[in-house]
Amino acid sequence: MKFNKHIFICINQRAEGAARPSCGEAHGMAIVEAFKKKLKDLNLSINVRAQRAGCLDICDFGQTIVVYPEGVFYVGVEVNDVDEIIEEHIVNDRPVKRLILDKAKY
Ligand code: FES
Image (cartoon, rainbow, N blue to C red):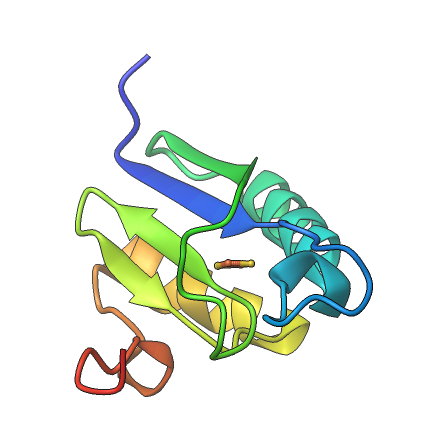
């Protein structure tokens, strides 16, 4: 199946005391569940998949997700950002600028 949008959500969890933070420790699975629920509730006519992913190697800015085909990385994503990402980016093709990774900092 070809997806119009494919969302990868980092749920990586490092061992306790690891030098770098990890998305799984924050709320990776809560974000996955929030995406799945909202997408199901909306029953969109486009093919969208939200799935768990391993480390996306951008670990220092809070919960990370990436949306393809655009390859837009979002960082510091909270559960209450999920509706906006879906309504703006997934449905209307308008990426949510305030959450996009600032490549200058990376
Ligand atoms: S732990 Fe999530 S991007 Fe690395």
